[in-house]
Amino acid sequence: MYKVGSLYAGVGGICQGFINSGAELAWANEYDKNACITYRLNFKHPLHEEDIWKLDPLLLEKVDILAGGFPCQPFSVAGYRKGFNDQRGNHFFRIIEFINALNKPKAVFLENVKNLYGHDQGKTFRIIKEAMAANGYSFQSAVLNSKDFGNIPQNRERVYIVCFRNEEDGTNKYADHFKFPPAVKLTKSVKDIISKEEEEERFYYKKDKYMYSELLKTITRKDTIYQWRRHYVRENKSDVCPTLTANMGTGGHNVPLILTDFGIRKLTPRECFLFQGYPKKYKLPENMGASQLYKQAGNSVTVPVIEKIARNVIEALNKGSQEEKKKVSVEKKKPGNNS
Image 1 (cartoon, rainbow, N blue to C red):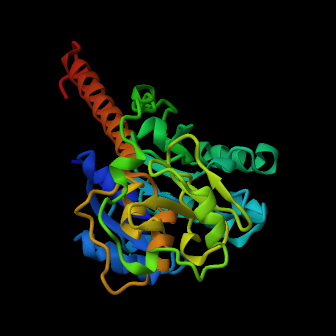
Image 2: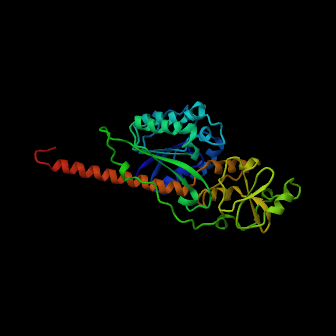
Image 3: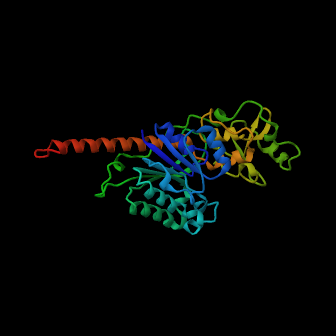
């Protein structure tokens, strides 16, 4: 069983995906105190609640796979487009430090926003690719949408990066065996995830809300999700959930809205986690504010997409190891080789 170390673990979306694929989580790291509370409710392996700049990688257990959804703000369209000039952008180079301190794991898995590809006219992405090559790794990447690759009705495009460690002679016994998973048919709908029960009153919009008349006029279907866009309502005609964001609980223009038998309301935090593919048994802290839970769901990854990629990573590691064993066996059988 391959051991995984998880940086920037959040509430465990990447961890859950690798666990579902058959891997073992050796440890995880997360700095946000509220995310750590949620994480510990659901996972028993060690969680290092520490700033990654202060966490000593030499004290961590060596792992086969290092994974992380490193901070995306410097690369996001919604951010300041500063990339590596933003202090947070340097988190990627901190990952490189962990890779080397952990004796170069067999595989590295990274996740980020789609805009990572085009940031700074492609220079940011090229630097990441070149840095992985300089440290002895192959490099494969793809943009996958949750609705197309996870059978989850959420429109969420993310960049996924998979790297395998090269041999000393520059060859790579794993990389040729890895492919990103194929697209799958979306069979789940918004109606499969939205609760049919009456939810807590705090999630509903009432007549005292300044936009209530506009909501009442525009939100007419029960099988789709709408968004309040500061001054108007937008219907998501694709019949999937729009990309969940970290600021869903703070108002503004990213609030997903639905029409139910009991009125117009926001998606609940539980529904948001389900739209990220978390299992129904996943625990949410009872006494934590909804805004924090919305933030955690919006910052997370779509678990089934991670699981599919992780299964292919493990398959590549297995096939590469099997080839190595065959090669060693053949060498031992050669005439004159008595070792």
